[in-house]
Image (tube, rainbow, N blue to C red; front, side):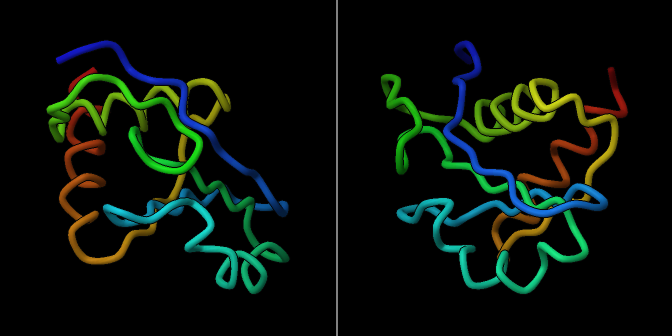
Length: 105
């Protein structure tokens, strides 16, 4: 495991924080249409996973732990004590791992 990367991210709206995690091969802009509908109720946070969009591209391979560390670094940078994650299928694993890691700290 390497150091977390500083992910490129966007924040739109106000309300409870909602982190939207895109899929492999995509970017945070995958969520633009959803953010348009949710930003009136939520503080929508989208970010590019390492190696995607405008985020850094560190040497591979990337592990699930690396992705969780990146998400935790973003959460910390934004000063979020609590947030609601949203994902599409496989990201369930990433979000669940992040929740477990947070509980363990």
